[in-house]
Amino acid sequence: MANIKFFGGQTIPVEMHRVRVVQKLHLIPARERLRKLREACNNLYMLQNEDIFMDMLTDSGVNAMSDDQLASMMNADDAYAGSRTFSELKAKVTELFGMEHFLPAHQGRACENILGQAYVTPGSFVPMNYHFTTTKAHVTRNGGTVVELVAPGGETVQGTAPFKGNMDPDALKKLIREKGADRIAFVRMEAGANLIGGQPVSLQNFREIGDICKQHGVLYVMDASLLQDNLYFNKVREPECQDMSIRDIMRAICDCFDIIYFSARKLGFARGGGIATRTLAQWDHMKELVTLNEGFLTYGGMSVKEMAAITVGLEETMDMDIISQGPLFIAYMVDQLVKRGIPVVTPAGGLGCHVDARAFVPQIPGEQYPSAALVAAMYLAGGVRAMERGTLSEDRNPDGSEHIASMELARFAVPRRVFTVSQLDYVVDRIAWLYEQRDIIGGLKFVEEPKTLRFFVGKLETLSPWQDELVDRFERDFGKDN
Image (cartoon, rainbow, N blue to C red; front, side, top):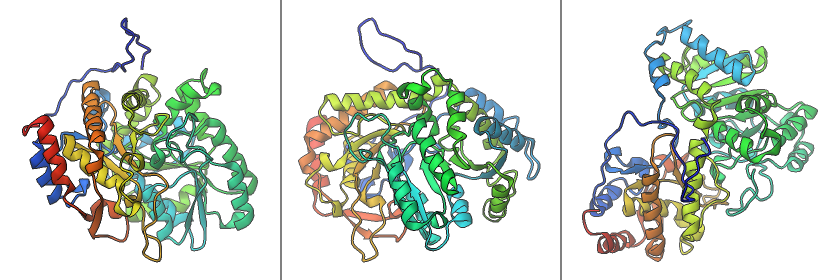
């Protein structure tokens, strides 16, 4: 975004785009929100979109497309095999990533499924700067073990370190020494560690971990789904990158890796994904898994319209005005909450604003899912749907006990080019009101619990009638129509 200054001294992000198409929003009253929440069994994934005012569940597949993306979709080459549109997408991936070979997939977790089947074997290990829920599931279901090696300070909620998503190089060396390089399926770096607040990784750290992998002959893989935010942070926070273009930073990062995969529901502003490989042997090793699970090698489960939009979206990712919008809006929201004394992850990262649920509702033990309780309360307080990123997102330990998450975060995702500053101010206001009523909020328990990725479709209920009390308090302060 352009560095636009206000005469009055305010610090407000200014959109470098015009809004040309709009969708109507609905704000149902708090009492009706309570009824809808109970029908959804306290799982915000189960809510209907028409019952939500501000949907901040995720940035995946809900970013606003540009006019050029929409135009490109009308000119796509609709063919099952040999589509010109696929060739254009492959050429763009090769141009930006510097990798000659590309496998399409319908989204990021499909890429994880393919990589897991191709490289993870029973007894193998996958070191990561930090795990993501679906990534971990695909590793463990193939018999592997995820090892988190985030650098010291990465799991600290409040801090000033500019790259809290970095991997600890000494810890990686120790793991390889202890387990053996032949038991490392691959090293995975997430360009923007999702579950610790969308915290970025420095170019220096990408390179340092890459050197270790090369030294030991270990495959080096990047999840580039959140790379656009990471590129912004490299540009503004890392001295080496300040005189580099976004395109040059992109290539410098990609040059570190053997394989790069991404969800285009995030990177590229559309709906799809893919795996880029440096060698033909890697491509050949995985190609049959694409045809088995996704579709033919020139569409991979995507429509050609989506592929056309991704091609344009990847090029738009090279524009600083475009990729800065998300981080600047998130930083604005974080700053407003910090001013009100509300505990949030700092410094502001990518993807969304992350509230520290453990500090917000300290009365709720981890076994009662404080993050899930907080996002349920936030829906009641303002019709805002956020996402739990804490213990509920973990799987249970083998003995059936809860694996208490190291961080309990309520994530308020900020999809790109979707919300206005006044809408963010509304969310901040409702979070601030809820913080004043935080002693009312109580815990949750499962009444129907899936074994894997339970946060998607599990059903929960309250342990006390705290939600009725919260709605009573809301109607006292705001009336019955809000």
